[in-house]
Image (tube, rainbow, N blue to C red; front, side, top):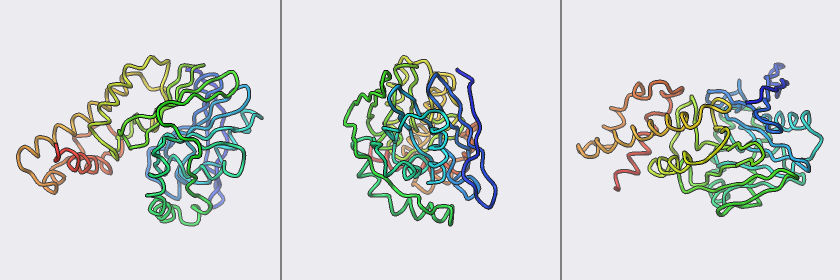
Length: 301
């Protein structure tokens, strides 16, 4: 992995500016690593990995962070790296920590890109997401808003940045029902969004069975490096994916055992122990949620 990096100050709040470091993980491919935290006033929603890829003609931004302020910090990082314009803003899925920064790129010439199912998913959740952000950030949420994609991916789409092509792939329901990956042919880098969690515990919001199945297909991809939606830049591949798959399979197996024993949802969730997710950060916040989501899906098997 290339080690080039530059540090900058991100959005200021209460007179204090947050650092917004960007690493050049491969030539022309820049990544900012989000924090392993819940969205708060202290972090302004800077909890997801975001970044951009520079071509000879223009730039593609991949995910934009959890608030307008984070999107503005990302836009500033783009300007520091290159004078080429942003032509695409690609959202890997619907979750607010990946899309609320879109507002920083609206009003220009950039096309907003997402899975064909993303507009409906965003529209159904926009009010809830915006209320949640206002509660978490207070006044710092001002200006953050949902920007829906205007260029949709039904299956695969190839984008030309000028001498550099990106291949976008839509996946069956897994982490969500609108997951999209971005493959940079020039560097062999696969940007996975939240189809891969590294260090931070995976969060099921689509289909646990679907996610396990998509994971098996992703494992077959021949890539030089991967960028997860959360976690380290270019974690070991496919070891990072295998760790996630083991966790998801463990949750599915424990829920199936509870169902076979006639356990109710409440009994199953109450018996779920975050210690079973040993090694994953934020397990206390998400393990029981994952058990709940798995129960709701698997009880209909």
